[in-house]
Length: 153
Length: 153
DNA sequence: TATTGTTATACTCTATAACTATA
DNA sequence: TATAGTTATAGAGTATAACAATA
Image (cartoon, rainbow over all chains, first blue to last red):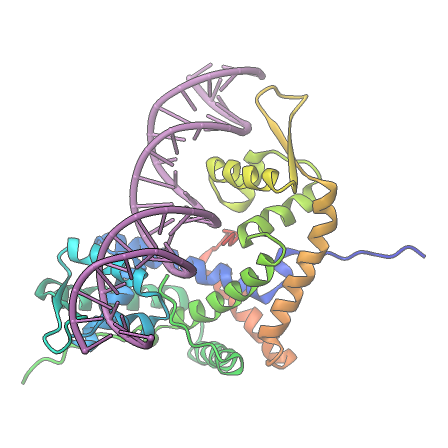
């Protein structure tokens, strides 16, 4: 009796299909953002600062599960684009404070609309109950596995 | 009456939760593969060559939806690692043929087992019917939106 | 000493475009 | 000319580690 060696195919995994859809959604959103000169990672930082008013790189790094160095680099790029500003924290000589510029304040709602539109495009083929079920299943996995990291890219 | 400007939150989108789970699954798999000295993109190429026996960079590029340059670079790394070989195609002076080395033949089933284990870890919290429903919904989106690209990373 | 942030370095992933060899 | 493949270049994304300034 010969042993049958089964090597599962790439598409034998749920993770494969998940990544396929997730990548398509992200790439489509990236293309939409590109028209506004912004990347997905930049959008995440902009949206985060929109809520925070003024916050430090450290706190952003902790919130987004990224390193401080990564935030510095991302912030540098957004400063170059005139979308955020960085100033010394008067309360702590080591700290900096990041905040949106007025231009970014006006841009973020536009980017949010692009996010809404992108999401709509991909999931409008599902019935409301199906969308709800998809969300429930994803949340269940997140809860079961203790996933916490915010996906920046 | 003042206008209320609603800027949807990052987590207001299904795409956000999808990316969160997908990233967690991929990162976990990447860590597992790292123990074998292989990246996710490399695994995808190895698994593809496992089925093909011998194939050209062009065909691989078309299959995976990547550029020829990207395949060359990926192949270079796998050749350095002793996992694939590249030889001239006797039938076409321009073409090359990629194939797994014996070492990779032995490694791929091990990597496939890691993929199985990773998938199991993430989705074992769902009941069989839930897993089936998740797959069905993902496939529906793929069909509705005409998604074709194989996720290499 | 511990913390904040920047800088330096490195690596993966991927693309575009120029180029070489062959068809 | 068209195709196959490599090489060069670039840029996003991210990490680690060394460092300076401040607490």
